[in-house]
Length: 185
Image (cartoon, rainbow, N blue to C red; front, side, top):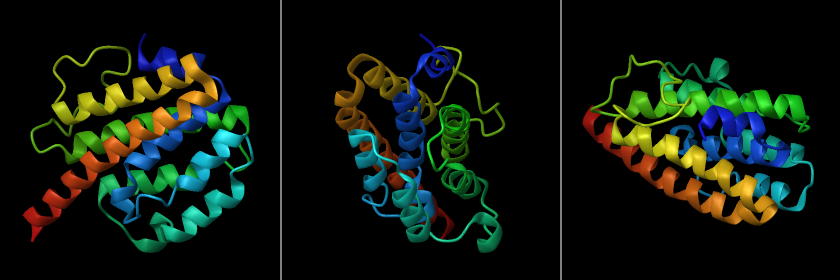
């Protein structure tokens, strides 16, 4: 099943986890530590409102893009994912946010991939298949599909494994960001 189909069929928790996982993998661009979004994952697990945890995460990750003057497109996209996270979690808002996070995260990975085509459309591959994609972008697409499949197949019990998938992706992106920074120095 394609990523677009999985998003269309996902329930509210699956959508929230999908968007949160995309954001979580992109936290290295915002200078956040690995635990900054943990309260949001905990809210998904126990079904509570994540509004308070979201505000704390926004505070910990700094000001919005307009205030910070960031010009790097990857950082701006990551900031927008955080800023657009809906609080409270209304079903229609979560669906739009999860879909936008999916596209933004793929675009971020495309921008950061040293061998990829940064000019390729951001939603390439979301309809199915990773043919012709760079390894970094293809891996991100597979992670997004895996998170949605875990939640569809296991419900709340799939959250732990979805977090593990996200953590792996965050480590990969952190390494890419680190290499990129060394290359600029």
